[in-house]
Length: 134
Image (cartoon, rainbow, N blue to C red; front, side):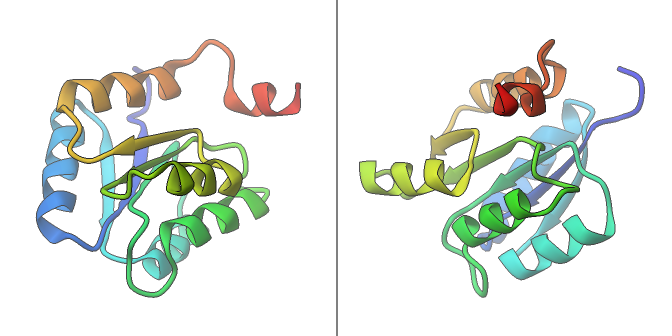
């Protein structure tokens, strides 16, 4: 891996956010962890990230709203977005897809599964940007 991949993780559950951050850092990723959708948008505007992991239920902007804003920005529109949330209804999953997410995972998720999905998005031979344009 050349430069460490940067991941922005947003979840209002401090315990879940810390566990997610630790899992990703142990795998060698640089992680910025924030407790709200509003802070996720501020961080995305200020720094470059390779991937976003969002909870749906957060104070201020929801994960759905954050994902929509990420898709509207030229800087982040082609970056992978993974929802990691306790909301597991089909309706929630459809909303996540409509907002522009690349993957929707329902908590609890095994760390190995999450890491393999993150690794897939960050080391893909075919960039998501190209896939979206096709």
